[in-house]
Length: 146
Image (cartoon, rainbow, N blue to C red; front, side, top):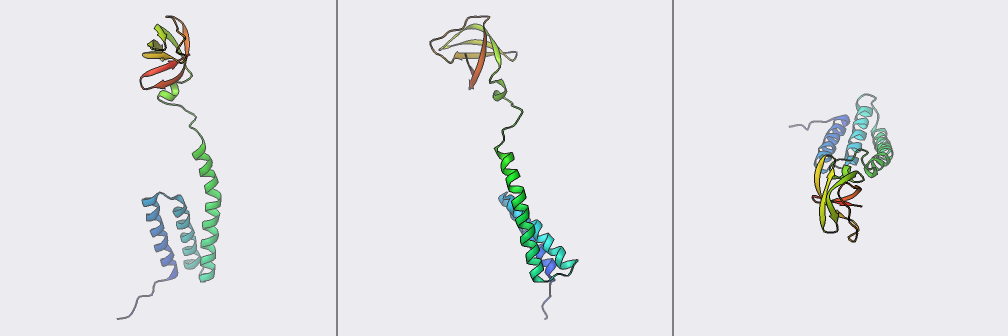
């Protein structure tokens, strides 16, 4: 029985597929960039007939260029806070109206159209009904006001 010769471009595609599978399993974006480099090396081998040195060089250059270009962009996006606050984060900094006297032990406010339990940030201070206050934090179902 004779061995089956597999062209170099097919080995590069097998490597790219393996890197793609590893990318899905590990969620490491660098593996995706290496997979693209392997596809580029397969193109050099299959379409342009490049030798082993050219294939490895294209793999290295494309993979390195992608990692160098994409990682800083990804890092910048990861460090940015979302522009649209949602949930309790959206309520921080909003104004509310005191419904029942609020002091360090509790009270009630109307915040975003809903009645909330509230507590004064400064435990020695109290706020009377009808007074406008600012929400500085939310702890569970209690708004912290000042």
